[in-house]
Image 1: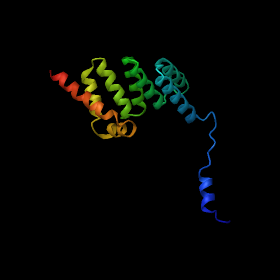
Image 2: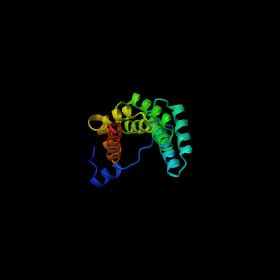
Image 3: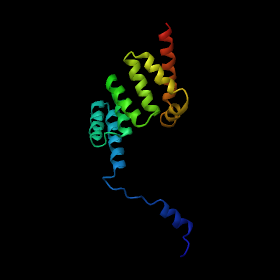
Image 4: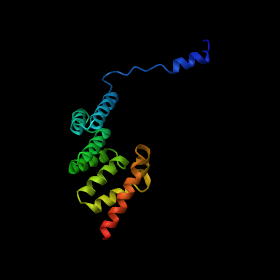
Length: 155
């Protein structure tokens, strides 16, 4: 067999791979993207609807549960946000963004001790590593909230 030239190898290396339209990972990515597109246009309800529909097909999808929790938090639906975040954490414990969402939902619900406990998971270890990998800009926000909650509890 004859060796390919570098330009031919390079050309072959960049060929797109066909992904079936009904590929579960592709459908999941499309649903998540559509939900965030709706939310970015100010239509949180539309985004929540897209995620809800996708969850009917994939009820244990950690990504969908976590995204649903985040959009519910943004919509001010704190009890529902906490519930979805807890379900996401059952599927993937110590997931930083889910811990973040749960902590802020609990804080908003006045469950200060529980919120402090969850935020403490984001100070170090796997929870922090996960948040650092997916949303590093949220770490200082979480640490400010943890400090605020500690001060409010001792006041």
